[in-house]
Image 1 (cartoon, rainbow, N blue to C red):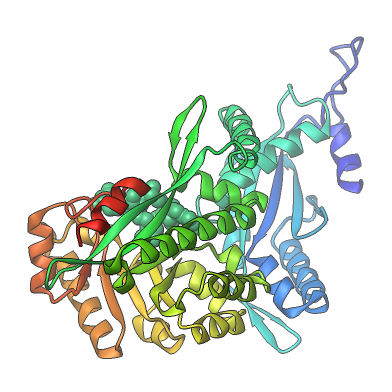
Image 2 (cartoon, rainbow, N blue to C red):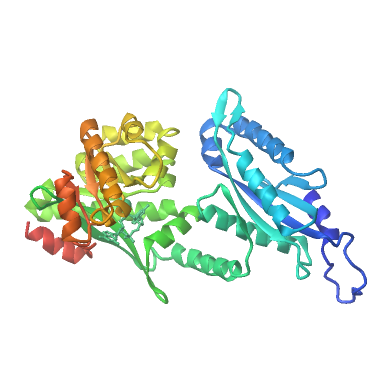
Length: 425
Ligand code: C2E
Ligand code: CA
Ligand code: CA
């Protein structure tokens, strides 16, 4: 409320008869920054609200130290803050303040004996004659902040007009996704995983597909993030898991060869954070009488590091079922293999970006070779993803990569095609 009251006199009032000579009290350039903390929820959920509250107080203090005395700072509930920059000489000054704020979070926070690293995402909007009420300017700052988050956080983004239609589209997609399950627009495809040593299929990875009634096929790369932001990922994730394991069960019942196959299922960090997840997973596979040892859960490197530290018991429970943990997109995050190993990782999937250039970029080839050697030494399995040519496959075989996946070997297949393939094994 205080923030909005501060902002009001700086904008043109929305009244029909407001005379043009009535200018806002302060006609200099103003900017509003909407700030959201990255990763705060994980800390709050795992260490409790008391630590969370102290941390928020320290965050407020640090933000305050990095703005000028004439600026305003307010907390907007949760882990959201807003800054009002008054009397800016030019736009660049706002960028300077934003960079300083992002920089200031490089230093970790010490709260009640814990050390936390936090990032911030900032959306910036400049005052404009079209902004007549504070709510409009805040809405746009919020949209810009979302873009900053979308870019990976720990940065700032300036609002642009195109963000509004984009946000509308996202909102529409969000609503459409919510009924995609009941409207039966979702299905799973299965991509074979191959042994590169004897060129046999060792398992499948399930991949979500959404057929939108107007827009056609929409990539999971697009809709998973939306599902994660809206919390719909829990429903969607369980739908995908149930479909996948049920299908796998059918294959095992129908085809003798399926008994030696494994199934890889992708899961998001949000699913692992759910305390009920391991038990529900256990119940599901027990009911189907499936052996946990043929199931692998794939989680991206960054999501794994984020969850392994705070939810170790969830991983331990899954591992007791025999379920293996597979690190997806390895190489794009910043973890070291030995750290992953300490956190008990069974399989590592080398990201497509390495495999893509393996035959043209000696550096990528060298890194891939190092990852494979180290993984062997640590006793972890290795799968190279995104193999698109024979040349890439040959390089991987030479580097002693045991498993591979990619369009060159087989594309993700609809259920019927995957079944036909299993029947030939
Ligand atoms: P991912 O887990 O890294 O899956 C591999 C992606 O690469 C898939 O894209 C696959 O179709 C594609 N791909 C496989 N081989 C090749 C190749 O040789 N070349 C190229 N260019 N691409 C290849 P897709 O199916 O669009 O999935 C995108 C991402 O969405 C997945 O990346 C995964 O992170 C996520 N995802 C898919 N299904 C699920 C799910 O059921 N749950 C969750 N949480 N995430 C899912
Ligand atoms: Ca995957
Ligand atoms: Ca991957």
